[in-house]
Image (cartoon, rainbow, N blue to C red; front, side):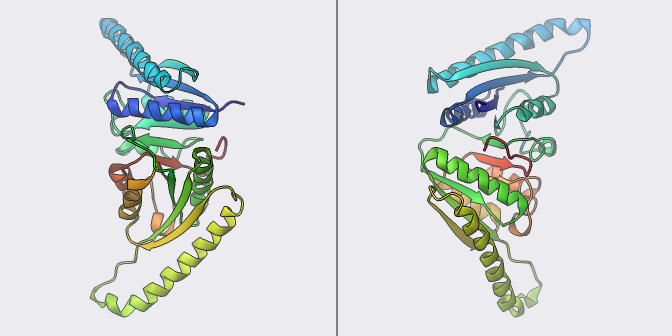
Length: 286
């Protein structure tokens, strides 16, 4: 079965960047692109005229998005769909039938704050495929994929997705274990040796798990990096020279609540490349 990549379109610049990313993703997979615009319904006979205006706007958004996608490749199979209803729920439905959902980081037609705001709880980590958030069209490529990896189940799924992405892109993979030291009082210096030992133990454990996973992907050049630091700062810095940053939808240790809480929100705000959020259920089509 051919891969299907769904891109959410709302007429904003980040959404158009997401469409372009999704088009290239579909090309890498040898699949097709489905562009979806979701409009909120107007209720009442007096609002029929506004409903018609919204429909015309939606058609225009889809036409512009399709043109952007076909500019990436005239031979790419592209379909468009104008949906009516709740934005998050409709996109969740679309994601359930796709290999990945790609959206802009902010927008005008209901996507604004979808990932960076409270409604992220209704989408990120609750769909059957990866959610990829795009801020702008990259100016170039770095042939590198970065994944936040802490050895948890969700991180394992994110790592598997990252390996697949690196292979599709003929890129190298960098797995980053960012360990945030626990906070102590003014007596923290007395615990420095203990903290160092705990960090070394955690890093060795994660590295061993990574090596086992890497053995399953011998064709991908990869490395594991252990860093003491805040995951947002570390991964955001790594994103400067990456084409994609991948994180699990939840995590333990350094990546706790990596996308559902402050760490993930910070990464999506500060990362300088697209961010893929992969849930433990996202196993198909990697």
